Length: 309
Image (cartoon, rainbow, N blue to C red; front, side, top):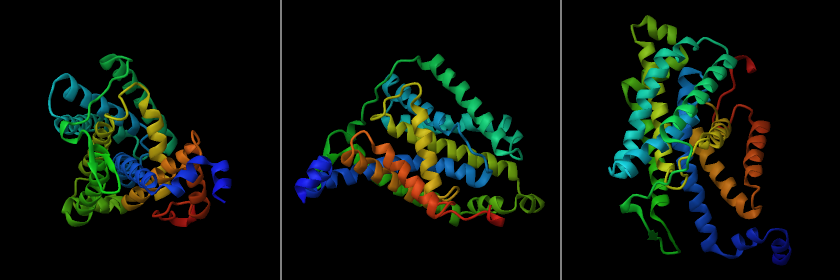
């Protein structure tokens, strides 16, 4: 039987016979999934509250990678200062974009929203080339996370192990914000009935601005975290935005927990798929999307729209 499996897929045979290799692939899946979760959580948050399909989310991720390169590699600041600077910089950019552009399309149909966000992608993509050029940059790992950590069964890169931890921490922080703070409860109320919320004297536009800033800051922070293994380069946002849309659709648009589960599933099928069928990992990711849409068109944790549409 093993010979048949080896003939069909040598990688699958290695997974079945080498627990250490399988464990490494599991950690690779979790670390990739958690980095994608940080970025996709911002996309899901923006859609859940603002009901805007933000196609420009990927370019915010790319700017985050460029900012951490500038602050960390060019200016010599610590890596985590650069990562925080990425989040803050994208927060400022998001505040400007939301107040000047996005407020004009909240009531528009999704096609108009997509056209506007795609225009932002083109503008910011060219702006990135003006500022940083077209060459590919490299970002070093932080000094404290270079090397590997001994986990008993194997050693694993410390930086990727950190990603496995920071993703759940951000999930807990976002959940606490949404469920345990007054601002979080008002944000949830804005998704249900913003007219009633405005009638109660709540500044709904301010809530929308804060949500867009938070979601975009998560994209910038995720881009900074990805920079050491995904070197900043023009166009790096194109693949990322597709991955994020797959994740939020699988999990359910607007669902934080769904985004978390979707990111984990994406990481698992991508990494194990690349071992089972090299260079065909994208096929497995899209098969995951297809299966979920066939079974639950609104996603694993999503809810069907009123009227069943």
